[in-house]
Length: 344
Image 1: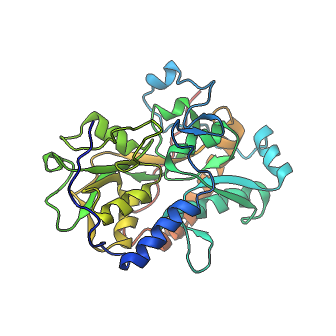
Image 2: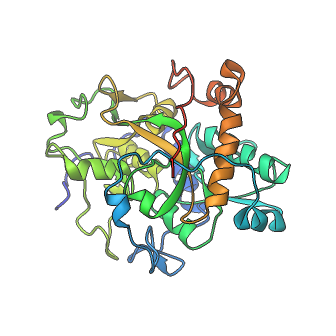
């Protein structure tokens, strides 16, 4: 699909304090990502981003009816737990560009957010030290490849559990409910995920469920770069990192973003000139902690951590983290989603 041109050139920036803020945003996205995408062939460490050379999606994934059902929680050791203990560190793939979820505090230079709190809880349970973590920042489109190529033990990065992905990685039980929604300037005529998107340039992250949603039903939106998946990929409408979409929107290079409402709320908090469009998300999705396919002992252990993380009602670690990071942008959430477990 040929991308729309000629509209919204680099005019005034919305929010972020103009050029200075723009430079900060670009610096965060470009220079701090530790596992960069190998541009052109979409590879990571010599393997396809999202698929190793030996990785295939089994028929079971295609026929799945309850992808959020995970392994029963257990606190027993296993080969993957022992490997982490021998190393003395949990290696976690995270985001550092998603405000309130996983982002680098510009003052302290530390990673903070809802997902980061959960990583610390996992490290504390396995290693007895919440700070025994090596964080590796990974783009959206490299989450699966990072696990397949043993670059990380877990990915805690607003990663949606779905039938396609359960054939590629192993998921914990759900730790957050989200949904896809449109983010656009307050002055935009776009009013939701509907016909108002016709002819509009819409940005999504590569490998995201937002892109999958547009591919299924775009309402006439322009959402693919002309050279997607090649060495000439423009990275304008489909981008490696979600924050890149906000940058594109601020530059006037795109008209809207489709992403999880949880991420969009953080972006709206960063830029008061944009807002969520539509009364509610048009999908229901659940975030899970991802591990390498077959790492059953680690998945069961993470599920054990999540049981403790949910326990305690309003005083639970989950609710404490929610109030700290998310309640302002996503008010009214009474608690985490209930876990679902497989029976076999």
